[in-house]
Length: 394
Ligand SMILES: *Cc1c(COP(=O)(O)O)cnc(C)c1O
Image (cartoon, rainbow, N blue to C red):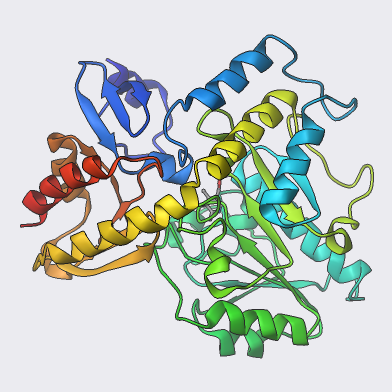
């Protein structure tokens, strides 16, 4: 029923696996027929804390009975505590809350440009932002303006100017592209949508050094990689790199509510003054209460450390399968890509077979199966999934 209705009444901008989820808890979902599946995608990393985490649900329920929306025309009693928590977890002195990831990215782009004019002294309308090939930062017109993926761009022009694209993983290319009008370099510390591309060791560090030398901001998009997913709170922690700002989203809402944010220190955040930016729903009390609980769960349950430990053994086990179809197993923490050899065919049929065996995951970029389960996943469940993965990849 539901699938036909979606086909009939919805836009065809997705191609979902044919499973209709009706219930979920932890790392498991149940379909309308009562069949259980292990969720190894976790809404593209928006469910790091697992489905319906009791603490996050309790915070949401409690807030529903108090106040849900005020707009930023007034204060609400949840936003302050949320911002303070976020500052502690992010390491940045301030945050600007939004709703979707794309909005956090748009906020970051505006901050980078305005900082370029106000602080760096770039002439009006000349600011350039350096980005990487195969990036994914969301779906708005300005964001797809600097995508290199035809499917994301074709037919959506004219595009927003002011972006310079350099090859991902090549720090020398970043350095060569930085000019007097460059306000910022904007990167994913690991490219998730591109197929879980981990850059070469030293890349983030070298880019950081080039940015520091040239008075250029380094901004990281941690929407998919952040909040523990890769085994540290932030993926740039792997190289002990501190960017000048980050965008976060997805798991910030604990799988319950869309919450995103742009985080930076005073020197960047002060470019915003009343009237220069905003969002009707950004920072609303429901979002703040849910995101506070989502952050508390990540910290109290030490989910980043868990992702590191469980992810390392999962990757080792995937390599240990020794499948001749597999070209490479890569990733960090519980963000894992299994790239298939060209002659093994596309990844989608493997995901369909895994679904039939009770394991939900999704192909990305034709040849890659992405495994990104909730960070709370039981090790026994991973072992169970591995047996099915072994069958499908044999
Ligand atoms: C998902 C994602 C976004 C966009 O987030 P939405 O909530 O879908 O707008 C941006 N950047 C990265 C790295 C992402 O993974």
